[in-house]
Structures are given as structure tokens and as C-alpha cells.
Image (tube, rainbow, N blue to C red; front, side):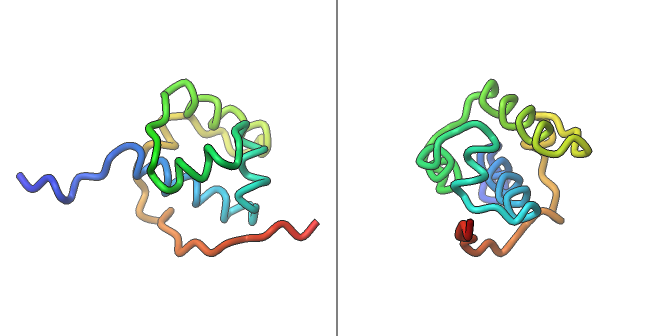
Length: 96
């Protein structure tokens, strides 16, 4: 079995967090505020420098649902791979 093609949960989480950040057209700073974490921690997550606890993923899902009540995602959704969520992500600077 070729282990090179296996995606880790943290890789999938990064894809999904970037997807939602882009979906709502938010800067990293604003998105961190919405999901209830610091900018530096979100940056570490997106650069795959830290492992994220399941309780933190739960908090991210809860806070995204509070931000958009129509979303209704679970922490499991944040660690489930969906090819449609792959993005070419460019920086969104806060304009306000």
C-alpha cells in the first residue's frame, strides 16, 4: 500500500477551513475571530505546524454554525474530504 496518497486529518481540516474562509470572503484575521481562535493559531493550523484537538474542531464547527445558522456542519464535516472544497487560496485583506 502506498502511504504517500493518504491524507491526514489535519490536511483535510486545512482544506475545509480555507474553503469556508473563501466561501465567506473573510481575511484570516476575521475568520480566526469567528471560529474562536487567535490569528497565530489559525496560521499555524493552515501551515500544518500544529495538531488540532478534537475539542477545538468541535468549537470551530459550533462557531461556524453560529456565524451562519443555515450551515449546520459538524466537526466530522470539517475533517471529511470533499474534492469540491479544494481552493487556490489567495490572501484576502481586511478592508474595513
